[in-house]
Image (cartoon, rainbow, N blue to C red; front, side, top):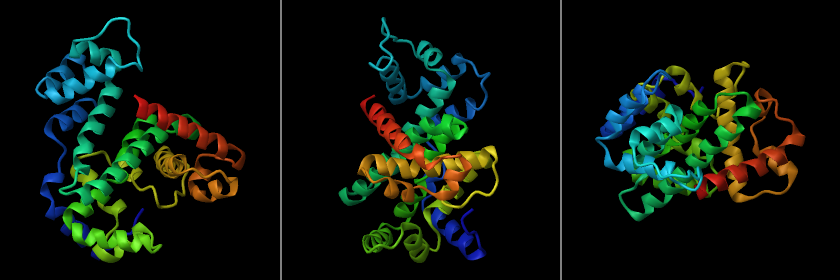
Length: 285
């Protein structure tokens, strides 16, 4: 896990305290996530929560009636849409909608970098879900962890945009974002993101899954989700930026994550190609 010395913890608390509005998810989204923690929850229960939010109602109906599903008859009922999509899909949509608002900036410059972070977060989430069968990890937890793995960046940016601009300058000079954030804020985005997830009341194993930068030492289900997110983070970059050289592709992937997911060198090209297809399909949808 990222370093959590007393000084680090104090820095994290200072950062989080500056942006109280980000300490909780939008109310409706939080209630959906809370209610869908059990597979036994009824469509009627979720419907009651969703019906108070016109925006989310529209999102669900748009999704279920999209070309992706090609239904012979349009669905106009929220309950029918929930029953068709399933609890896990509704939960994933709630996370996507709720987290997006946290990546909106106050000006064009902030919005531009946060939009890039959001796009990468969504690409990583899609890759993590697609990789789950290869990595033998939970696809839904991988999706959520991938979606949230950059949330600490927007928290740092919101707490002090001027200082984060200095992080961007250092990054352009070749300093890693983790090192630059640690130097200028006293904590990096992974540790801050985990702190925010705890404030949201997420289970500890999901909080731990957000640590996509530390080496895993045990072949546990939690570490496999972490490894999946770490691979998805790198594969999403490769899929978007395009690297054709096999050696360069291999070096771009964290070795510890490859080991935990039993990823071999001869599988890399297929994983990159699959990631490109998964991201393209998600963006089209």
